[in-house]
Length: 218
Length: 362
Image (cartoon, rainbow over all chains, first blue to last red; front, side, top):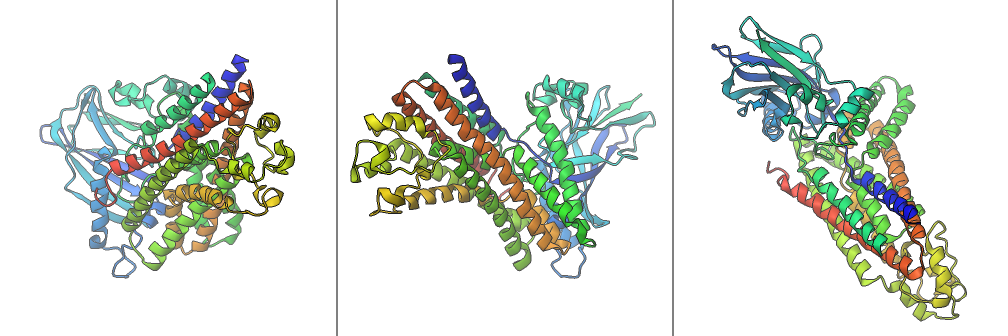
């Protein structure tokens, strides 16, 4: 009897838990391209992001912005949206994480940013200067993703990243998000939530969403 | 009593889990379209499963918007669109948002039948769809405001919705603790016959309910401490008390509607995005239809969950057996916990929403 009671209580709790365990789903799809900028000393000085939004989100975002009704969106008409985009992204760390091992780079808010429409898709350009330039180390990794998965990032396959003005011996390797196979699922289940304190290879494993680039200068 | 306490703790703990997960300050990363929920959901033992669901939802969503767009030149795709919308709605609701938690807690608190639960689930999903359509119709069609302004409006509606849930939870809790005596008056008014069964002509149409055991004991003991779901007792208006027909049913109906509206007025960002997109593509009607079909799918999932919760509660009560007093107390305990959960959910959601700053301040 006790066992059955417990089973019933367990079932009840499970139902309750199922009711509150939240889950995210993306409503914004971004095709991304990243550019890593180097200074004269060969250190990383900034990261430039080019994010092209999906057509659905574009239509939502530009709703009501054509204030002069000429059927086109001028830079001036897009400016307020670009402002609020960049301002809001700050709270989300611009979805951009650069680190060498446990050394995380700090970004300054972008001064250079704008929106354009390409092929009826809104495209956001913005440059994130580093607080202080960072030397490329043995474990330098750039990651871009939304841990809450409201935004789904996909990097352009052929040229996901560009190292701008980098020393000749530097290169970047792209690791796209892991496919969700059974093995990954099992590995993920064993990893604690706090992914950013993990070594880079685990960081990458910890998130099925992370687009990760390892940057190395040999 | 042990079980009862366990249940109370479990229900409250469940609600507290929500702090960590959902009451996380939800703000929009682009300043437009606030995520429906936020927090890092892909950790923990269930993480990969939710990641998997979210992953597939992403594909669904894109197939859905693709189907919507293709309607522009080819109307044969309308059934595909409806099919995708329905499936999306079902999946969308699998990862539960606040609505499911509140509706489920409310059902547990009110002791409503599964049938009532199903009705409330579909109604709240429909109210949500209507809310999205009204916002887009006024915002985008009539006023032609920007996405920033529309997000501002929905963020305020969200705060109102969460506040309403908290107030509603407080009201429910107060009623529960007070003991919901109105049902008992009834017996005083027409105490004919000793047994519940004959005196009142209880044509209980609350079929799938857990009252059966209560009534067995009830017939002789006639102790009125039980507190079952009044909402389903459609017998009030019939033979039992012809003189005072629907006076009590009004507040009870109002209560159910309050739950439906409190939960439903906050529209889902996805629906708003899709509606504005449809409007921009010149297929607004198709977008509206898709939104309602989606709500049907969402309602189905929530209804399944609600049925599960109500059934689970009944099972718990049945298994805990051991005399009517015990069952009565247990039922009361569960219901009070449910009401407390609604209040807590409302407060947490409101707190999380306000913590990220008032709309437009960020």
